[in-house]
Image 1 (spheres, rainbow, N blue to C red):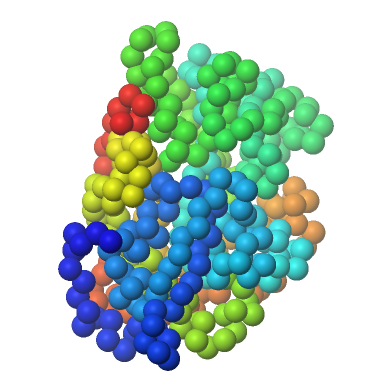
Image 2: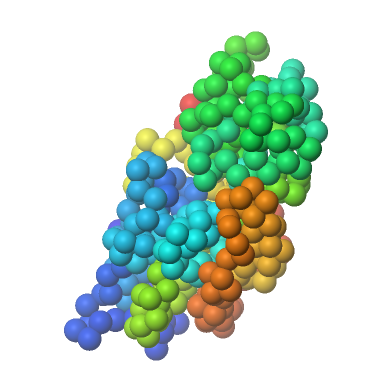
Length: 361
């Protein structure tokens, strides 16, 4: 474990959660993808000892798409998970009984990226073009965008939605004119590639990026889930609050010390690529900060927008139950962080300017 910062134990007196035998309480956290800055808060909380200081021993479980957090948590193979809201609501519709206990990302990271020569500058330029889109529960934001511009993603009228893998290969091969991507991942990777036309790295002027937050079709993404029946036990509720307190502390640290959090990730996996991870850390921070009501607190307007689009796309058959998310646990965690003087809203935060080096090095 890294010892870069000494922990101040006094602020945790009376707040930690320990088992009867004073052993750390063991919890499992299922991620929806592999180690990267998208999940920096969880790894940093572990490596800087924030979880241990709360009396927790957290096992972080990665996934390459083979493990879906909603399935793993519902099956009691992990107590906690990180996933997208559409996945949680669909799982609950099928009887999973999961609860969103902290909406970490306040904005969606989904964009549509195209090369400038295609002339796709806004969503209304999409008709008559082939659009690369992820499959299953990952496609809803792009499908909503086609409805928004008056097309029909089911019939394929006006444009063709082409299934694509979780990378920009089809766009680079000119098999599609625009492609779905996450701003913090493959957009950053693209800027670390050589543009064959110029012989230099791709530059922002070489591409057009449609931000679905601006279009009005964005859906809430990374949040923390737990089973409702697990939370019903008082000891587990206390453990969940302790987990949130440590995790949000780490996200605040990564807001204020982005370079340090990237170095922590690189010490865990040197092959991640420093400049790409810094790009990713910076873009993830943009999705979290500012959090006007406090990091992890639900944005009701974006909750409604997400649900409304899912209903319109027939991804949900009915409105989700009111207890699909709860804000009391994250509010309790934030109260103790605020009492320490920590800034939980990031109102004055400003992003970095990041240049990705070739290959993301």
